[in-house]
Image 1 (spheres, one colour):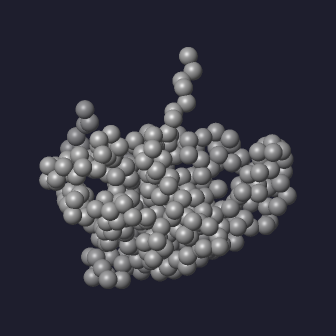
Image 2: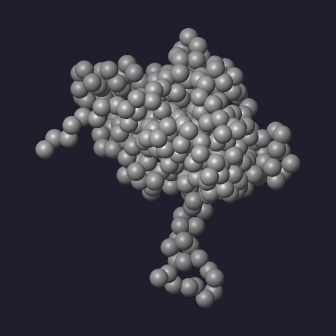
Length: 363
């Protein structure tokens, strides 16, 4: 049981933290730099990105896999003054920085901002090239976590992470199992690259097994669409359980409301999209009522009734699109959409509606 402070003052450890943060703030403000200081983690929306999502490190990864760690590190040190090329999360990070600039204009002293953390299992020797690349592109990333070959997922909660993006599906699954919103990122096809907005962060979500739990998807897979439609009609007024990315939508909504409070709804630099295979008339009401019950808004809701998502996403041009099913991810990135796979729920056992044979468990 927690103790009650009779004077309503902060606990001693919080006071110590406040003093430490004030000292860090003063130090950063005195630096001769145009980069804004990072926000206090307690109030920030923290986005942790791996080095292979922020930058294109395909060639470097090949060296690691074919020639080993020592050759990989030596290559990175030798080329540390050559900036790495942008990776799939790069446009998303740039869009986050734009939102921060707008927020600072409206709320100069606010700590409710995006905070971008580089979360990587790279060795510290590689850090110089990463820092040089970040400075080359003028990215505001001050917090690093470099774990020297160990999985960084154990640090995600300590960094108060709201979203973790990686190229490693196993690490992403670990994060989701720890209750952290996470996804595996994929680059769009370069010859069909979409021109993304420079002024508005655009985030597209699938519904079931992404924003919502996979309870309805289980019914589809096990009993078919007719039973699914009957189930959704019967439970239309019962909110769906939350999925792995509900908390990230919640974080986006928190920042959106800061713009609405300043009468900036029409000029808000964050726009959210629900892109779902559900049909509106047969199963859409429960989705919208669930969002309403959570106190969350979605800017645009697109019910496709089973039609491919890629062509719609090509028009939306999101900085990132989240889906739990790889065939939707494949269709999206083939048409130029940067996509992120959420490995959650019963959909991971199926491909294009067919059950994937699971490897036999070893005795």
